[in-house]
Amino acid sequence: MAEFATWIAVDWGTSNLRAWGMSADGAVISSANSDKGMGKLAPAEFPAVLTEVAAELSPAPGTVDVLICGMAGARQGWLEAPYLDAPADLRDLAAHAVRPAMENAALSVAILPGICQRQGGEDVMRGEETQLLGLASLAPDYAGLVCMPGTHSKWARLDGTRIENFTTAMTGEMFDLLKTHSVLRHSLTGPLDGPDRAEGFRAGAADGLDRPDNLLGRLFGVRAAALLSDRQPDWSAGYLSGLLIGTEIAAKRKQIGAASVPLIGSPALCALYWQVLDMSGASGHPVDATEIVLAGLKAARQHLA
Image 1: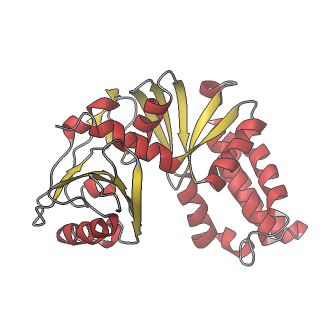
Image 2 (image 1 turned 30 degrees about the vertical axis):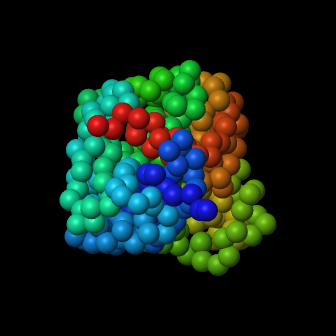
Image 3 (image 1 turned 90 degrees about the vertical axis):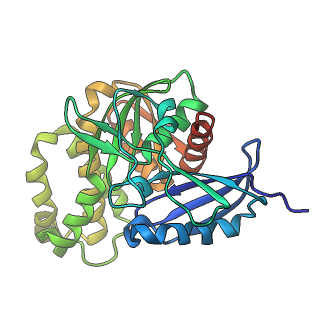
């Protein structure tokens, strides 16, 4: 007989959502994905999407708890879950969860809040705070910087379950904007994943680490290198990526020192950050993003009222 899910864990992002049917002891017994992320939905559409996804997860008869992290709790999402102010103990996330109305009485939904920073520079995160709680639950003695590469990369200082402060770098978005909408697009038209991309990445990362103050000048160098040195699109794409990541890591160099930084994100992107951290004299160790978010949702559920 197939096992029923006693509760459902959901990571609801801007573009997609991932959901897992969980057993009472925290094991994953089923999973489902949907491309109906927050950015594609009006608030009134969220309940039907959740009901549709939950039906794929073999929910147990009766009422099943659903715990959601991510952009469903944004102001433009399903129901806003107001930010918890940093510094904060991530175990308090569950106490600030919001409960949207559901016509489907079989699903009891709670949405976790994000974290904001008002002092020392305004900043916000949604979803990453649950990953940090997951890391704290799997490595309870860890204290130091955590890097979460992505469209908007996050750097957080964690001490056990306490997030002290964090910053955001728009590195991924800047790459896309420059590739698509700037003069650099003329040097990035064609295959971008060719054999010279790795060489370009190393060169860009070295320039970003060595001269982060010259970022604006080196950006135009992408175009100049194509015109004067016949650099091809794959080299140019690698250089631009390396330059941006190198500049991002250079800004954290004093804080990182020679530490090994946990990296939470896609394997390919974490590998690039690991490479640049190694070039800087530090190190990185990728952590499985799915394992981390599930650990965070399980930890938060223990404190859910």
